[in-house]
Amino acid sequence: MPIYEPIIGLEIHIQLKTKTKMFCGCSAHETDVQPNTNVCPICLGQPGALPVPNEQAIRFGILMGLALNCTIAERSKFDRKNYFYPDLPKAYQISQFDFPIAKNGFLDIEIPNSERKQAHIGITRAHLEEDAAKSFHTENGKTCVDFNRGGTPLVEIVTEPDFRSPQEAKIFLQELRLIARYLGVSDADMEKGHLRCDANVSLRKLNKDGTVDGAMFNPKTEIKNMNSFRHVERALEYEIERQTQLWEEENPPKISTTRGWNDGKQITEEQRSKEDAADYRYFPEPDIPSLELKEIAEEMRKELPELPSARRVRVQEEYGLKLSDARQICDDPALADFTERTFSELLEWVGNTSEVEGLKGLARLVSGWLLSKLTGLMSERGIDIRTIKITPENFAEFITLIATKKLNNTTGLKVLNSMLDDGNDPTHIMEDQRLGQMDDEGELAEIVDRVLSAHPVEVVRYQAGEEQLLTFLIGMVMKETEGAAEPGLTRNMLLVKLKNLK
Ligand code: ADP
Ligand code: ZN
Ligand code: MG
Image 1 (tube, rainbow, N blue to C red):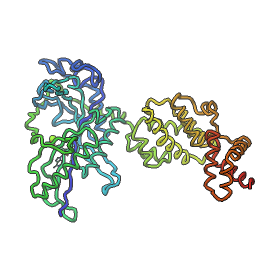
Image 2: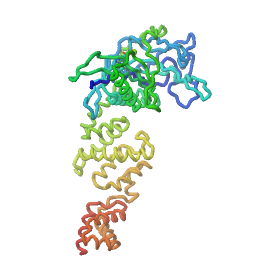
Image 3: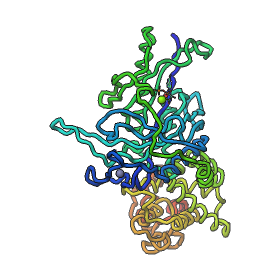
Image 4: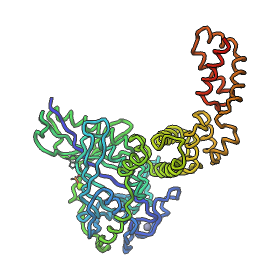
């Protein structure tokens, strides 16, 4: 059986989060407004209206190019891409053809649980363009167009055909989303259409030794109409299967085509054969002078923030976190900020105390309480780290209370819940709710005695050999103290008293 290797390349559009549109002053990205309200003669393509490029969009596009290790063009220009469609009032889109703002970059991604652990993905180019309007179909068969989206800024990123599996494509898209969020250029939410992706895929035949048998590149399918990472992965898997069958029937694709993902049916469907660049009759946009980008590029290079891949490594090393925890924390820039501020508070405190074993133990506490408990409680309440009432200072104080055993898992959870609900600091909550760890042995001893005399049957059974009843008795003490008893102390005290009762 011959082996067929998938060859995948992506074309991605990202909506840039600018206040205004790409070539006019209309408000961009406003949701909850009436259709066709954010429009003007420029974005409606009326004769004589002149486009003016949006500087913020250019800056955002350059940032994206720099983050993808691209060369930024010293001189760039806009071109007209001609096609006729109801959502394109000028009958051309202002885009970039032969002088994109950025080209020749790459992004390295990590691929877990796969043969190829790392993939080096070449970035062919990144260019700026305007979005089309949105058409939708009514129940009575009419098609309406809302021009609010028409003319909003996009950066289009084209990759080399460097992916070898649908999983690699998905991981790349997720990393790209994160980079856009770190740069603040887009929310890059696929479900909301901030990030859109067309996926190109073909197969090639391999010999047993891994060399290519036949053509290096074969006619491809371009898949459209996917609006989640899962769709991209599924559509590629489906298409690879479909093409494999064609190859096995000795009838491989002879021309490149475009297919649409039908998520309901979980299949791709033929749309049309692919148009060529020639069909678009690209030519330079005569109304916009060329862009001189050298200075802006230097400015933007200085503004480039730490990117996710670098932050993961640093956060892991600096605080002694596990890689998987560092990854989860850095997957949300706001969560990463919260965590780092918590750690810097904790570091001050560690400097003044000998009560904990140091940063390693703290890292374990922080990631445990933050990633499993706090994120869980937040999602139960439908809130987010950006709107949380807990400050990093209070969270650090909370961790110190756990680290010094003033709170245990049970009382800690109660305090954390209260902190989430009313934003108070943990020490006050502890005092208010009398949740301090009960380290007063006299008080605990009384409660233990009370529990023992309330359960004479269990005591007798324990002494007759049913040792598992100790857990039950510890539980009863915890219940009496509402979780405030220190479990180790409780256990010892019970053991001593049960022995003495014999
Ligand atoms: P088109 O003729 O469709 O414009 P391009 O050469 O511009 O093709 O490439 C568009 C995208 O398709 C890029 O992401 C590229 O990496 C990818 N691609 C090109 N050739 C192939 C191929 N043979 N198989 C899979 N993907 C490909
Ligand atoms: Zn406008
Ligand atoms: Mg092309």
